[in-house]
Amino acid sequence: MFYLTINYIYVAIIIRSSMLRDIKNMFKRIFFRIHKLGLRIGICILPTHFYSSACNILELEATKPTWSKRSEMPGVQIDLDKQIRNLKSVCLPFQKEYLSNKVYLDSVKSKWGPG
Image 1 (tube, rainbow, N blue to C red):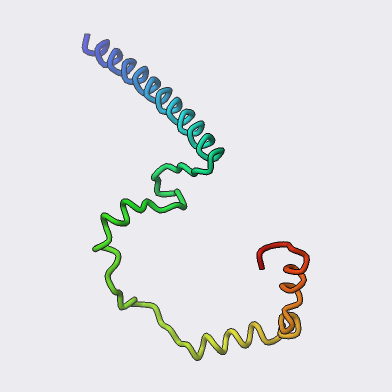
Image 2: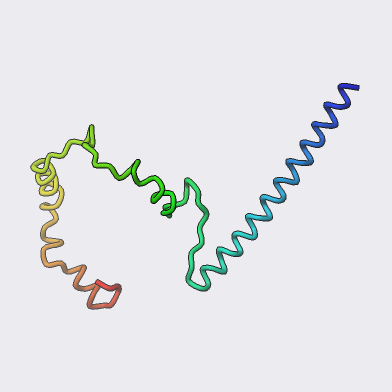
């Protein structure tokens, strides 16, 4: 009898989780349709999710005291002279290419972008 009860509960759990999965998938489809509708009218509706590239500004406002403090930035070493030397070593060999800014001027002239 106990064995049958466990199987019954197990079957009920499988059915329930399957139904929950179906409901979750239904909401995903509905959300995707809402997202597409928003894009058509110029509004981008995004989920609040860790992997979303758009930040949740409501969460940022609520947690501002945590992240907006001045930091000493431990472990970050800034050596401006070294950065300047590095820029010179990387950029100066190509100075002839960018000195007249020909690519940029040609792009603006051809109206390939705002400039």
